[in-house]
Image (cartoon, rainbow, N blue to C red):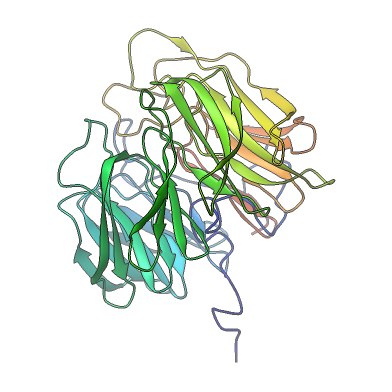
Length: 416
């Protein structure tokens, strides 16, 4: 008899790899990413439509699940061959694996549970009038699939203002929380039966997982705007970054996630729009926080802008500087990369959220069209791969296997 699902957890079951959302894997991945094992593109895509804003999910058998901006969900084997495909209405960003099912949602306010082996629906439910087209993600915990929704388009940029918990057995609503603001790229951390997340102004919220009631809320920046998130380290501290002046003047903060009390804060000087990662860096295993900084070129426009950016690491306990990695200059029309075009259906951030391997290497994508592997101890570049596209989801790591999403193609490295 084979091992049960409980005995064999999935390699990368959700965005940022685990429910603390810290981007840390229990496995080592290839350091050299110059040569791909395989590449995958959305079937029938063109330069404007059919992109990948999701993070690839990797199950216990190294099968890879990819969701697209045109409603497709695809399951691929570790060697890149297609296992099954499923279609749903609207944009699909990043779901979550739990047991033998994939739980996901669409911009049409529809939640779906799929059987991992076959791609057939276990259930489908309309839980909200719509959901934002931003890069939010599903969370599964305690028999609930947690999604976001909205009654109408928020601020014209695809945000959400309600959180909905559905029963994983049948999709019925268990609770609903209505925000007093808007949130983007919803990616909550689960800590001690609580849900921790930020809104568009960087305000950290804590909800009871049992019934969705607000426990506390920390101050953010009322003049700011962020699409970042929160990551909780193995030290129990929560880290979040946001922008204090619309899309400029990023700040990184460390919080006690039990009380919402601030522990330390760093002014970053540059825009910081993607969530941090926090974990042991390099072979010495010093606990650090890694965050991407730099101008997000944004929607396509006729004039070129320099996408040169920085990746910075800070000591997780004190906030002191550890290292800085800088990209080359790259002139872009839009944040989608060198192939950015008017009217495209994806406007990613300057950086993806980083992923950290077991041996402390940092994997991250940049809007200049490259994916990088950086030594977590020193910030030294180890290898890179050119796709020409930016990255909205982050790299996903399994045993000697890493799957890197860019908006135009997914690229895998490792052994088949």
